Image (cartoon, rainbow, N blue to C red; front, top):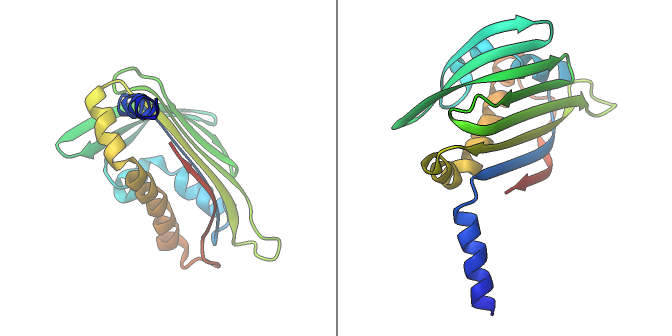
Length: 178
């Protein structure tokens, strides 16, 4: 009976195309500084790992449509997202273009950090996606944790490049990967 349960669980996980990552961090940059970095979509290609092209297609108020080209050699793909920008609290990207993903949602929420340190903030970071392709899903499964962490680090490194060193050491408050 136990062996059958393990096989069922393993079989389900192999074919599960959906991925989810959530993290909450306290970091040593202000919410405005981090918002500015994350909302700077046209420059992603300059600092975001595997992003080879980032193009703003249209801007209407606080809604941006952007196309990103992502390269995980030998695979290079592009997709278009609708990005909602609410300064300095939220950057939310949603992709339902149907070619690469069944869905992709990335959300960054920013809040003031420590009362005693205006150059700190809380970041709630959320990524949920499902590739259409089984092959892409399997590649993502193998590297998902590492890729998401590299992406988080890239945004903090870009903030450091723009604003100098953090005012405090970053602290992970909560993390969930599935």
